[in-house]
Image (cartoon, rainbow, N blue to C red; front, side):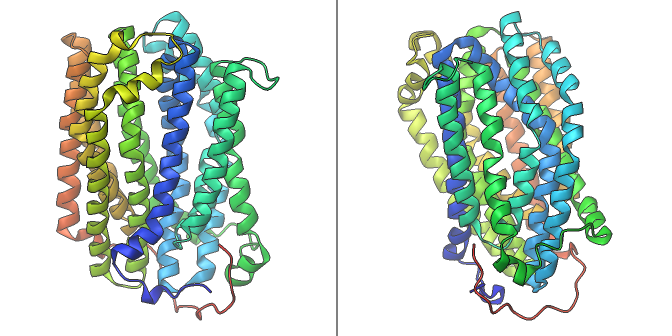
Length: 468
């Protein structure tokens, strides 16, 4: 049976019911990226150096389209909380239309990506590998917004187990294809970094295929009219109004971080390898917080959809406690046992632990300092977006990212010739300022007064049994 959203409570149990599958999903992406970079480190130092900046740049170029499509999650959550079930499918249909329309734009951004890689000043062999990796990823880049749009229908209603299942299958396919295509196992050709990119493209369509199969199922169509797939101008433009700031925010945020990663690559090979390893390890602490933030955003949307701002505030605070606890435990693990993580990247014998250990450990220490701050930002920005407070998130995050973070990194790395430790230390200040601003905004309560959806009389509660 569809659960009655009116009995949802702001308890740890309700939060974990929605959050745990998303945490597992985020953890699977962590494992995927970790294995991807570990395999590439075994293959060659050049492949590892190229994969991280090119991968982050790719995500920067497509994340705006992803964020716009994913913002339908907030609409689905609030429509679901308000009992307007057919509008859940209408919002999802608009997100799918946006995702499909983004493909030509993603392809058109390939020259820009290649130009930015060239301007980064990396060595010729690394640059050539970066360009191969980025181009292949961009060609199949539509899978990213398509996955965001198709999963929003389920995540917005709190059906996060099917989202988890879809991503777990897709990520498992990706890891397997990485192993086969990077090294040439199982009769496949040895493709190195090109194989890693091709594995990502192929597996990227697995999750959307699963989600859309369930979305268009007869049972879901009976309740939500999911097969009535058409353009709804009122819903579409309302989603554009609130979703575009979310997309711009994510693009500018990741662009600032891409600048950071690309500029560290100019310091030297050892610094670049150490930085890429530290970033890969740090994902273990950070990615689950993204899942918690998504769950908090979903529940905030559902609570506000039925006019319960107090529960929305309570669930965000509980999300913070869960995220802080997890992050602290993981941060301690790689501070107390750094060699365990670092040796995973040196197993292939392409470089030695002794060459990179001191710098990598220092960077992991910086990452531990900003770990709780990152967790705070993920949860509170998720809560604010779930409420529709996308304009504040966009403007504040952009101002800090480009006014403080990028400006400071440019001065440290380009003007004063600072090293990787100084650059990472400045990043700690950046995350602190972000956390301070999001805490202030959340405590102000202004997000409670935003009207994200146009309300109508709630539809009757569904009585049919509905699949995931």
